[in-house]
Amino acid sequence: MSDFLDEIRSRLDGIRAEGLWKTEAVIASPQRARVTVDGREVLNLCSNNYLGLADHPTLKAAAAQAMEDRGYGLASVRFICGTQDLHKALEARVAQYLGLDDAILFAAAFDANGALFEPLLTDADAVVSDSLNHASIIDGIRLSKARRFRFANNDMDDLERQLRAAREGGARHILVAVDGVFSMDGFFADLAAMRDLADRYGALLMVDDCHATGFVGEAGRGTPSRAGVQADIITGTFGKALGGALGGFVAGPQPVIDLLRQRARPYLFSNALPPAITGAALAALDLVEGEEGEGRREQLATNARRWRQGLKALGFDLLPGEHPIVPVMLHDARLAQEMARRLLDHGVLATGFFYPVVPQGRARIRTQMSADLTIRDLDQALHAFAKAGRETGVII
Ligand SMILES: *Cc1c(COP(=O)(O)O)cnc(C)c1O
Image 1 (tube, rainbow, N blue to C red):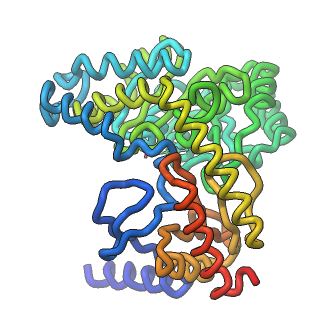
Image 2: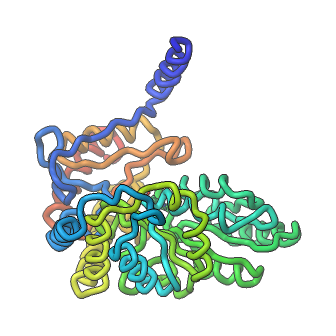
């Protein structure tokens, strides 16, 4: 035991020595544009609260009402005695929103991706996966017996090579799996080209739209809508734009959802989502599809444009794009942490990202816009970035 703990401690020391140690900012307020950290109010530029629904009165009221009507917890997995009318309503609502046959809920999108591949694909099949896909897709694929092919991020020539290799290898079914948005960079997957290639090679297309559902595409239907294509299977989360609490889903053709309901292990062996979440998620979808959703999406897009322009004008090195994820490149992990520390001193919460969540030498501060941020907030945040950037020598 003591040998074991010594070995763990030396690995922890190694993480610290490399400047890769992650800490948690402790927030003592609801999640919103301004949060309380260390007894101070700071601007929050690093949540996935894209539409500002995490503390929205309509969602809170829906959660409270659902808890009042249907209780706190289910104390069961779905198939034993944990399915409420709210689950069925939410599954139907998600499927309708995304224009697919049906949907199945999970405790998180991590579980949805972990659940998806193993029941659907056998060793006669193949998965072709983007190299920058989310960890949960990678883990989900690992759990399946399907043959694995990986293509360079968003590289359509390589995708075609891998599809050809899968076909020539005799794969029965081929599933192309991709993030709709690559969350470290804020880049969109080239879904139009992927759909075209998938069709030419007789493959299915699965899109994880966690960083898009609710705010990208027509009525926030996501990256397939933005690209003008249909994905065969979509996975998503309620933990980001759709309220930010918890819960995920797979939406797709009826037989796919039916089989997942029979065989998906995170579904069969993990608890049902509680009423507060299912009730509020239903309200979130209503809000997002309605007029308020449209207004919030417009505000989010305006904020993202304004924020990019402001940072660029200050001389920061940004990754290009349109998504409300705006990465400020610093390259060095220690510098990213130093910058984050100084930003907090100047009243802005923005976390440094470094290995292993991004490649070595590609450290950054990933800023994220929210519809809740005002022009005044953005001006204040730019001022803080200017100060911290000059103090660290990142800008002049
Ligand atoms: C956040 C995220 C997940 C995990 O979502 P949870 O619901 O928090 O488990 C999965 N895939 C992608 C692309 C994500 O960004």
